[in-house]
Image 1: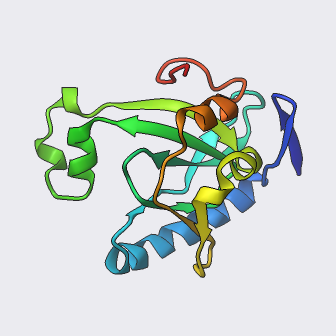
Image 2: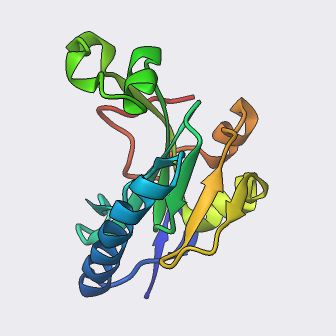
Image 3: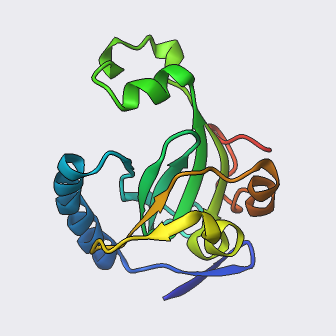
Amino acid sequence: MKKVISGKMFNTENAEEIVRWKKLYDLQMGYLLKNESFFIATYMVATDPMTGGQISACTWGRNCPSLLPRTDIVGFATVSDALANAISSTDFERLAPSDRYVIVLAVASWRRVMDVVGYRMESTDYDPPRYRVTTFPNSEEIKEMGILSGFKGVGFSDV
């Protein structure tokens, strides 16, 4: 099924398909956590603010080499240095709440992400599909992707 958000087309799976993919990615997570040194981005299920339906989402973090799942939308975020260091260790619980912040810089459809920064994404042989990212989009690319209509608000930052 195709939906239009901010005049851009991207694929949105029905709720049953999203739940099925979520289960597959969750199963894959256990294997990857044991066999990969990269951060394993979570396949999340979110509410589409424009339609109220379900969409899939993941987050691409600055300074955090990751394996991204294939999702409807991608959030681009920066985290505190303390949080970035804690993600790759067991120190997360010891972080002060003031050190656990995330700023969302952009939210874009998968199609838009591929158009603007697909060259930064390396496909892998994983099934379900994952993309290895080692560099973060520059400020011009972040501005070009922007924040999808309906996703501006609390927790989101204009570039």
